[in-house]
Length: 274
Image (cartoon, helix red, strand yellow):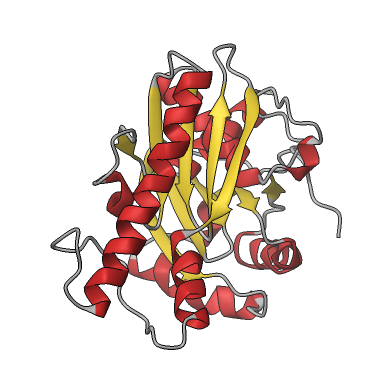
């Protein structure tokens, strides 16, 4: 199936009550945002699985619309950022059947308004571009986004407002899972901020090592980034464990869990104007 790279095929908006669907599909979770104008009126977070069918999405989304008093027929556009290509066909089918709309998938061909100075722009995940755009528009440049997902990504926008690349590290959850899986006498523990730096039992020692070790990773990278790129205006965190790590970081300035949806909305507005 060929993705639509940016030509909006909207239904007539009709009135100001028309709805916009924004979908952020990551390796772990998929977030659905329903917007009426500038207002996020409903959101839903689902576990990402490549085996989920269009029928399953319909069964999950229809009650959401019904409970919120929303009519799927009001939806005039669907814009998707996805890093899980096997789901693109399923999401396209779902959008056509539920909303009667051909979705737009953000990729390296989409006119986002963010210049991408990557050696091969097609290699950059859509979510990374969307996040970087949102951070630039909200906070100016240079700016850094740290996205705590399955992987933790650092995305950098330079002073000229261009996406220049970043870093990719193993996410905190899969780092912890590697520890649990490969050390025979260790067991799974919750990932949280421990009461003390020095653990007095095995669970506490692991929690401290995972939590403070990961903060050390984040802050160590940010120290080097700030030395290489002076004048960074903001370091914005997003993703599932952003609040947890940001609370102990010296360099993260703000947590914005709606950053990706904000970026998708900005791109939709640009495509609509065009």
